[in-house]
Amino acid sequence: MKLTLCHRLYVLSLTLFMTSNTLAAETTIAVAANFTKTIEEIGQAFAQDTEHKARFSFGPTGKLFAQISNGAPFDLFFAANEKTPKAAIEKKFAIKDSYFIYAQGALALYSASLPVATQKQTILTHSKIRFISVANPKTAPYGTQAIHYLKKTGLYDTVKPKLVNGESVAHAFQYAITGNAQLGFVALSHLIDPISPAKNKGEYWVIPTSDYEPINQAAVMLKRGENNSAAQAFLNYIQSDKAQAIIKKYGYSIPK
Image (tube, rainbow, N blue to C red; front, side):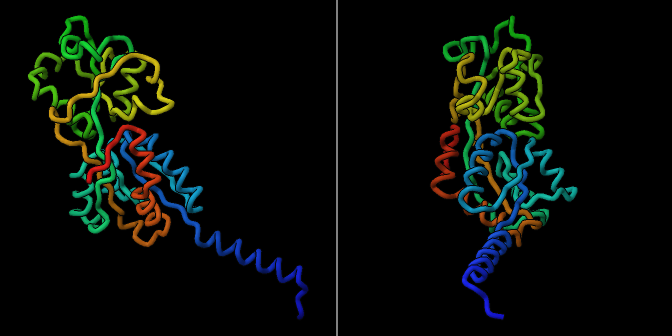
């Protein structure tokens, strides 16, 4: 049968449409809670630039690792530390060669109502402070490093009775921003997020990095994502100049 020009154009457009949809894929990614807003913005840019889609599941690093250990259907794992992705590799859940550090986080002390920017240590030990929020140090690296800071500076024994654990650093921030805790050890990214509820509320102090261990945040491809084109594309994309500019915008640094 001889096709008219219109028919030929229709067949060509249909073929291109089907090819585009065949090439476009979707990936499901486990992400540490502190990186929520950052990776959501990267995910939007990724979808626009590649036609792939990325879906995210957020939580404390330790809890996400437990889900991965129990077979959760994730393709990629973006943790808030280095040791948990390395453990995923050791347990044969992840691909060794995919490991890399995607960001370095910063720890801050925040209060919605108190002058922590100028009176940080005085306020920490003030008798009228009842609650200080911190991410659970057993599952959340930001909580681990907050405790490290308190012990290194000799403040831990004084403030220990006042510490209130959030499941993740995002929960610790929620306690502080709502006033349920007068102070909170949070991720700097929560405070300089362009649409953060803390943007014009309260004060914060960035804790010197010399007072806690580096919060190097690492990622790996999980075995489930090995043949997922969208998962591989996302790993490549997050190391692009465009994605790294977004990461820096949210207060993270990129380790060399």
